[in-house]
Length: 64
Image 1 (cartoon, helix red, strand yellow):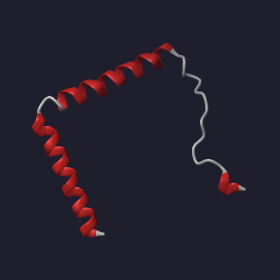
Image 2 (image 1 turned 135 degrees about the vertical axis):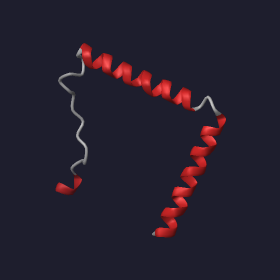
Image 3 (image 1 turned 180 degrees about the vertical axis):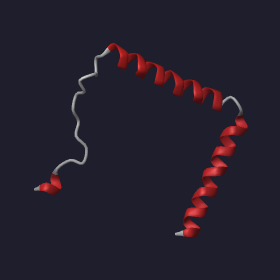
Image 4 (image 1 turned 90 degrees about the vertical axis):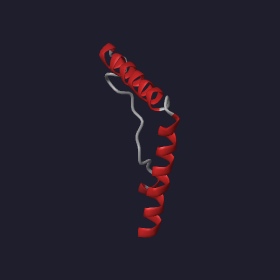
């Protein structure tokens, strides 16, 4: 029966409705959104990211 227990447990946090945590979550979401928009302003950035990930995958497959 132990193999059917979930790996992750979902529980309500005590600070879920705390105003400070709400502000931290909003600031984090804004920072992520702002970072993504700044990154995607230059089309070359996305091309470099895709090329870099392709190189990493190739190295992983060649190594493994």
